[in-house]
Image (cartoon, rainbow, N blue to C red; front, top):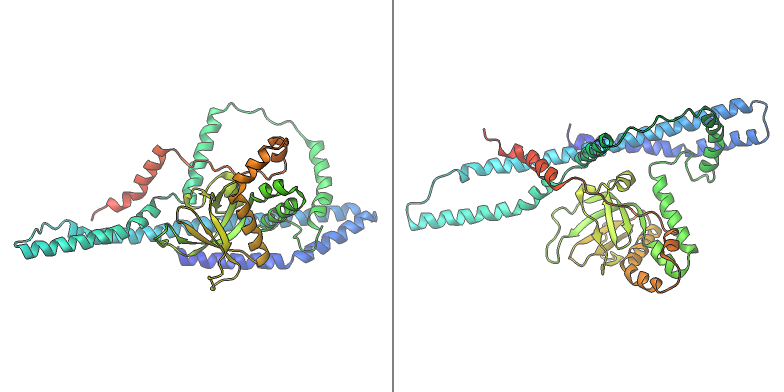
Length: 388
């Protein structure tokens, strides 16, 4: 119904996730036991294989349902936040109507001077609301997804129909037989990992994989590879210019992607792969930026700060000191990657060979055409023009 009730549901949903994670060891033990029985060619191997397949499928289905609901709750939270902010803005606009519709012009010099001072006060008040109205103009993630869906639908209509796929009964049967062994090998390699990847499992794996890859690469290539990284961080916008504090200095959990000399922010990994930025924010340039541990910030642990050349400054919180240092190193390498690339370009190694060792970059696509965006703005602000 509102922001607080959605936040309550999100807290309950996180509690369910904690219960799921607490049972990871049980699933791992069960799958390992089943694999050992299959390895010994147990007389009930067919039944064991079937049960393992059911177990992995049901667990994957449960995780998928959890992720779908979590994504939906985040979308709804953003919609309710917009509704709340829009209501406050509309109430302020309605409150100004009596003054703006007044025909009072003053009957003397003193009265006119008072009216001028009153109008100057109104202008100052209106200026403080500029940023709030600008924030309301940004499309919510739900709207961006709808725009993207419409664009994909239009593209599908323009494309010729594709031929129907041929039957793959034999192939599907083979995939079913291999699923248990493949899934079990992947999910039981360590007791710390879940039998089925959790929503945060993939992100941890990406960070770990990039760190391991960077450790085995030559020095200069290692620096370039480390400049590409992604994962969740808590973020706080401190300054929006050299002399102006940010209007909203709350902490938000965002999916951060470092790609070459840019850092983009997204709701999650799915939004990053789709190129849908968090609150329509464009990626920030890391050229000549400064990244260091925020030693002066005492309210939270494992916090580092990123100061950009345009005056914007962000605080980021990692889960532990190790993760914080990895992010600082990756951002530092990204800041100086233009110098690194310049030095490596003089060597004989082809760029294509270097590119094969790097993670895929994230491409940020434009969410809608300018004309469409203007129509969306008009539609969003139509509620402010109503008069009773």
